[in-house]
Image (cartoon, rainbow, N blue to C red):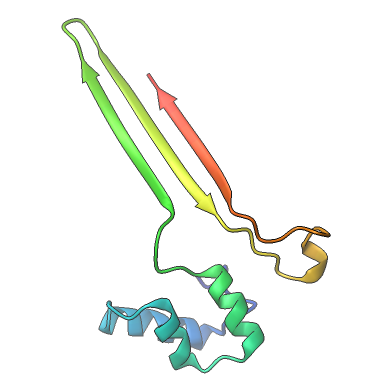
Length: 106
């Protein structure tokens, strides 16, 4: 977290988030960031870098027959790209979600 949020949050703010999350696990991301009293720019960056929900789901299936077993792992992840500056954002592109699908069989 220290590396990922280094541009938008200070070391002390990151420690404060971690402490608040430990003390009050039901606090959502918005409430945690409210307590930090960030300026608008850093707040937007932090919201783009952190989440309190997962968009990654997986399913593991094992099928067994009399002579062998089949294994399959399927993973679906939805990512929301974040441009850290205007020069990183391609012209005419919005933050359209990217869906990654991975499937492993053996």
